[in-house]
Image (tube, rainbow, N blue to C red):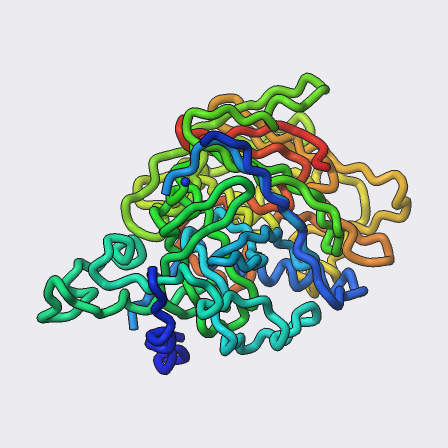
Length: 467
């Protein structure tokens, strides 16, 4: 994959140009829209399963990066849901600011943007993407763009290598070698570019010297990524946030102009959004686990999913897949960039078995075989759909009582509903299980207030209708 980008490593060398009071910042978070949304719910659903499995494989078997300013107060930004199952947030970079839509991702850390007028994306001709009309950041139009040098400590945030390795032999104090280019992989997609320093323009806040990736070319990755993971390169770490939170609108695999808020809260500040619920719902917390020290498992938000109940029945699940291990195996990670929740087969199969035992609709085996969904039913009365209650119970007492729409979805006009928790049950699935046992996707997070309390190292959960 890295060979695709070798000719691009120094393309930005000509772009070197001469060289953050308490507020609440609210940003718009939206379902990922498409200019040409597919009218075929079956096609969309099948693609969602495929991309979820690709994403899960990447998160569990990641490839390391290949080498070839503090925020005070609270910030809110809109989040938009998208038809393919992701959510986007628009952020503004540069002087004057250029607004760029980015995929909101808590499963990775580096924030990167499609960069320069020559940006290209191979294999990006999807039904809802025009690869010739991708919004790009233009460094030449910004007076604050600076390329990161190899001796800059922020270069070390991206690359584990020491300074001598990054710069090469004989690079002294006046060395002008730039930070090595990066190649990042996302499932079957990838992106390559160089590290730059820019101004991040937030509502009521200007953050200078913000590290970001300037990508020149991508494969199957048309939009940039807003990395909200736990590594130093992430937006929460660079802004030294105390917490951030969101409430994801249901996307139902279609496009909507509606949005919800992504709230960024400075250290020591209270989140005003958390107290807005008028139904008396309280936030329940579960602790984040200390991550492994090695990349990229150190980027993930690990929690301990203690048990799962279906109806009133406790599903018997193998312990080793539920408990986060020191090596990154087992446990649950919370990932806004994955659509459907992924479970390892030893967890998935007992869950499906219990759902089958308590559900009395006719199985749609043909749909299961063709779509990749592990459990589907034919439901004749679309106005009276009932399935056993599904609850995720976390360490510390936090729980997620799932609305039906969070774990079953209508995938055809013939009334077929499928479980939106998936696993790789194919004969070719690896027999050795590594990485997290569960990846909690954004579909299961819909209509829940989710708070990443970074100061107290815990995840807050509250059932809430997102608006």
